[in-house]
Figure 1: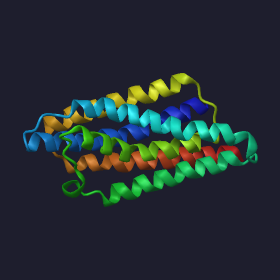
Figure 2: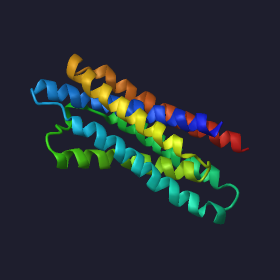
Figure 3: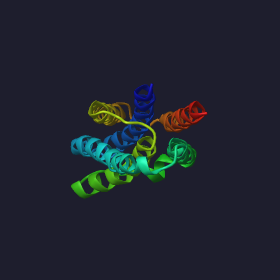
Figure 4: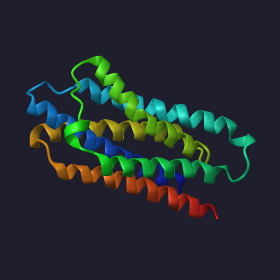
Length: 185
């Protein structure tokens, strides 16, 4: 059951990545700049590395924590979900879209996005033991979401309705965290 919840969280986070990549692709179309294909790989790798960077230390200290550490971990995930919802509500595409035109910008945007994965990994690390294949699934979902978001945004242009996907992503993360908290009782 933990794997299903984890995959659901990854899908929710990938949905948010898809929406942000859509806006990036649309901006690149608008200013007639080549799509940042390197961003697809760098962002996917950064997401997985940040997730692992949060997950492994949490797994290392879980044996020294009280039995209710899973609730604390899910509260971390809940806070990230609320943060995603708040960002989606405040999101204004005209102010937040970044033109990714060099390697430095690619790395900075990937690192900024990876912070959510760091805390999600930490929260899940306090609760579940995950196998290696879950990390591969996370990488695959991120690569597919960002690639399809960039290409779709480049093809169809800027749509304000894509912002709704960011909100759905945050709501899904909150729902998964609340479900996991209630299962603990």
